[in-house]
Amino acid sequence: MGKVYVFDHPLIQHKLTYIRDINTGTKEFRELVDEVASLMAFEITRDLPLTEVSVETPVTTAKSKVLAGKKLGIIPILRAGLGMVDGILKLIPAAKVGHVGLYRDPKTLLPVEYYVKLPSDIEERELIVVDPMLATGGSAIEAINSLKKRGGKNIKFMCLIAAPEGVELVKEAHPDVDIYIAALDEKLNDHGYIVPGLGDAGDRLFGTK
Ligand code: PRP
Ligand code: URA
Image (cartoon, rainbow, N blue to C red):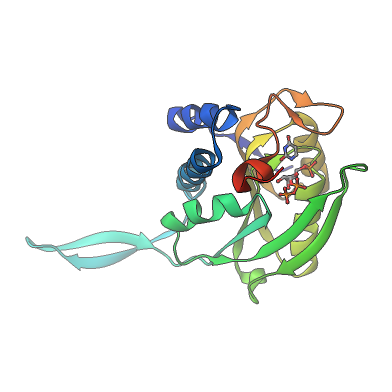
């Protein structure tokens, strides 16, 4: 069964409070999501393999470590996942970015796929699917289905806020996928919104309604 990691780092928790705040405007919301995505990327890359190289310092020759060149792919779920991409790329600039476009039908709450464009070698890459919200879990499950259908094997899912119901469904549907969360909230309401949550992530990021 996939593991669930909740990042309780003080900086992440602090910024998340202002992301939740209804009084935080679009510009600040976007900046905060970007910053939290960077901080989460720092944690999620903790296990990246290293290799030893020689480096000439001004004093001597030293043995030192560099990343072993593992191939990564960042896969935002459109739209709201886009808000997390730049923050991750600041730390992992060589990662390729694929896109999965899904929207949640407001009546059925089921995800509808409208766009998929992925790096051609996804089967060789460690893929990090990103979306600020994991609510019913339908979008995460569908996005991961979409990657697996096209050869994706090594997949992680990263979000800001998740509902327990959605996390359970993702774990059942994709037991090979670890889930990384900044906050595990209380529940879903009758409209499929996370409580307390942050509202509609896409609308808050892009200033739509
Ligand atoms: C939101 C969010 C997730 C999805 C989560 O997207 O960004 O993708 O809902 O809900 P689920 O876990 O119940 O599937 P939305 O469908 O509102 O589209 P948007 O990003 O284009 O606003
Ligand atoms: N999508 C959002 O943007 N917010 C929620 O609370 C649930 C789904």
